[in-house]
Length: 175
Image (cartoon, rainbow, N blue to C red; front, side):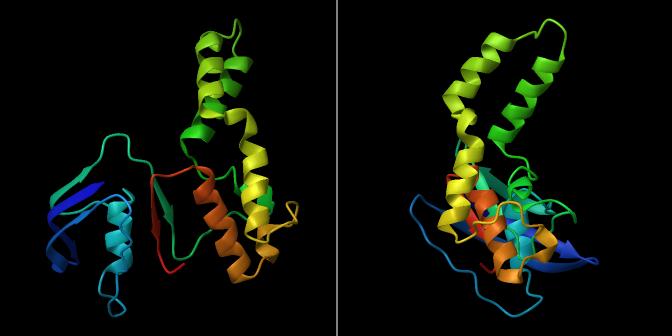
């Protein structure tokens, strides 16, 4: 699914890690263990495409959807649990936003194509899927404000956010 060769990331002109090489195959379960400050979260950020790297290469399987649960998820104050599930962008949410923009555009150009894509992606059921995943993670008050959640509840909301995107691979930073 992912092939990493000779990866290097520098921090303040010093290598945080260098010459990192590995392959992640389908169905692999891998734990990354190391001291604080060793670069574990940075490596995960690089694999998720959030951070860049200084040298080496990362090759992803075609159309690989990577879901990333950050160590410390952050949402803006005032949004609800359900709104948090629409906060981060994934392919389905991007498609829903395209559809909504099309409806707001005079003449709705490309609506037929978008309707087919929405059907194919099962985007019509996005909110229902979000509620099902939240419930399975024992989050049932969809109107609760995120700032009132405990750290564990917030992490479960963030996990729901990742799972809703139906990723091929999950990267979990201190789940």
